[in-house]
Image 1 (cartoon, rainbow, N blue to C red):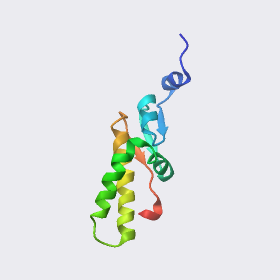
Image 2 (image 1 turned 45 degrees about the horizontal axis):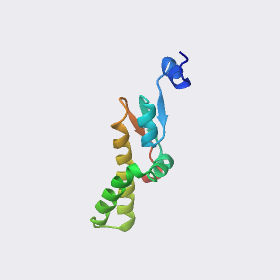
Image 3 (image 1 turned 90 degrees about the vertical axis):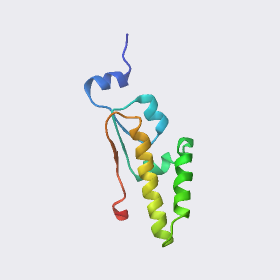
Image 4 (image 1 turned 135 degrees about the vertical axis):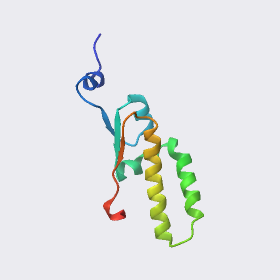
Length: 103
């Protein structure tokens, strides 16, 4: 039996996915996952994240305060939400890079 390239890689290394693509992570089963703001933004176009988006937008609409501050909080909550959903799929860690300007 010939092993796939992914199976061969698993024999030599720990597989870490650098994506926010929920279905790809579910299918390929990496040990760990990492994302960044660009990957999260792209991932939020996927249907699997529609409920997360609606929930966090509803949260944002219910908040008082400066519009920009609320928008930044919604972005943070979406990023955390993507990471949380990915953490349900991987046995290891999920690392989420954030924009240093947002800190």
